[in-house]
Image (tube, rainbow, N blue to C red; front, top):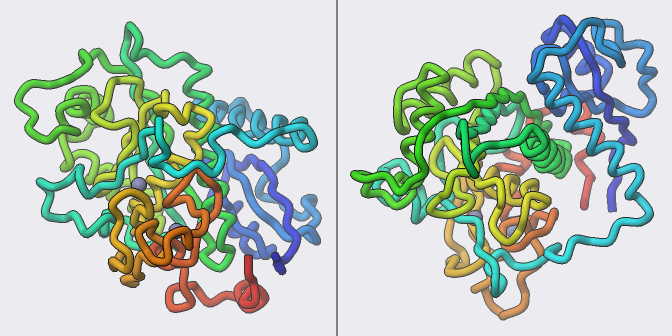
Length: 368
Ligand SMILES: [Zn+2]
Ligand SMILES: [Zn+2]
């Protein structure tokens, strides 16, 4: 059951990012996706007349730069597909399947990936730039293509990734209105010449397949190699975009040690998305994002009751909790856009952390 204000979601263009966002806020809405300085998607109460928005417009007032165009095309493509599929679409065959279902590889958490890193906390990353998912989040979306061969991205694949990222983040931003989650994108299509791994001299199994192309991408963005580089990138994003939090995701077609994983400030994902396929990047990316903000896995060898996240919430929807079969569907255990109360708590969605606003007073009785 939902008991929230009816809203409209609109794509807008502006030449004044900051004032446009303030105007949206003053009308009782919020910017959900800031695609670039000149384009954003806002959620506004239905009662708001869009003609009252004077700092942004429904159509661009000048030619769009390449990155903005990429994000806008991806967004409008999804919106149109959703409209036309509304009454005809069947659920995907993998909808609701457990992440470790036979024949499928699960998206990994950071625990096995960062055994060499002291910063690792349990199964969530517990990273200072992403303690809990409330407020604004800058996300660096680095699309790493090789200049030649099977690891080169086509424009259609880049567009598909951005569509899927938008879908995943749009869902995350809408699950808990009191968290007022918004995403500020930094989309970086990058082409490197690195050979595919495994790379000699890398002892960490993930580094063995990630190091050379990732460091080449970081170098082309002006950053140092390794964690120092992507950590600085995350910190810079947070400072420049003035967001509460930040993290980085690398998408690639280079072979990986595992097709999707989260480690401290970064998510790494393969375009093929293993047996789940590119159409499920939205859910796998949302799953990895929840790890970044403190959620633990609920499949495989998860420990019932183990504490995770900023608020230390027990993992009580783990598949190993008793009685067997009591687990409810959740993004942290299956390919589904639902989230249990424990995962919500682990990423900080709790009264103790929600910002106090008038909107929240209206929404305190929300149950979903
Ligand atoms: Zn996971
Ligand atoms: Zn859960």
